[in-house]
Image (cartoon, rainbow, N blue to C red):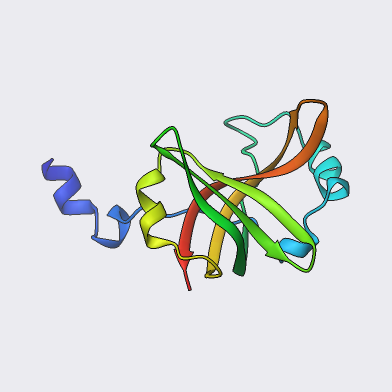
Length: 128
């Protein structure tokens, strides 16, 4: 404790997310995901890339899943992507339909009932 008090500043105690690239939601595609697959395998020495999108419009939601997870859709002009924020369902009350959000997320694919879709796993979110 003494060492921490002497060597850690207040700024060092604020959680942060390291962003690898800032992209418009409209640029996210299966083609991009295939390129990311070439960087695998991901792990401690090779973390999954974290992307950010600024002022992404909420296309639908927020929806509460199992009373603890947040689901929403972001995008516009026919490019709507599902986004999940695990264990952050309490944030649903802060989000209003048609709001814009800054998102930090990882990109993956989800296969459900034979259909494949892009999925954003939210790491952090800010209402703008």
